[in-house]
View (cartoon, rainbow, N blue to C red):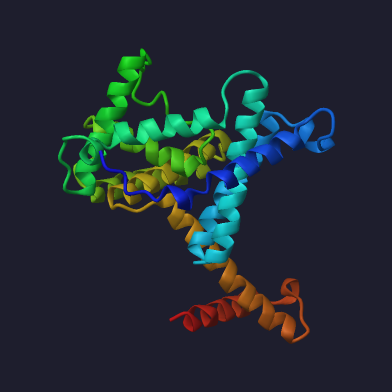
Length: 272
């Protein structure tokens, strides 16, 4: 098998330098008091945060920022690997070797004799290889939903759950069928509000959001990303109307809603 990767460009010395820096930071003798006391649990939130910051740099097409954020994310991998090595569990080389072997196994159309012409073909092969690996390792799932991570953001997890269920045929025939279900959920929410039953309202709002995610997924939309973009759009427009009100020496709290809506529409027009 020919490997076209430029080994010199990987700069293994740079990786080793980072590993050595982390070992020094964690050294009980002359390390950093903060780093020494950290655990997998205390570092995990930083790992999640850094992954989101990578995604944010990509969304903003900030390549300088992306370079920095990828470094921060790599540090998280080295951090967890160092703590594992201290406990005699595994080290960074084990992590790198495992993911290399997995990528080769999951891409038999590149490193083997399988055929895949489209991204959909690749997805089928990926899932088949993943299932074969788990069967070989004895990690047979009781449910196809068992390994959907609980720690995922709720929208992302909903989309993954729906995708798994759809893979075995538990799926609407058409995306528009989900809109009919959404209309049902909206009406049930109206009833719950009329009953002033907070438990029912809680459940029905969750059902509505689940339907919206399902609808987006069936249309090929990444709903987590879609909502992130909408959040950014709202923030951008609100800051615009906020700046205009403050420029007149006024406070938002004293501005009539009708005027704020007019300023909001003005911000929308600026983006067209």
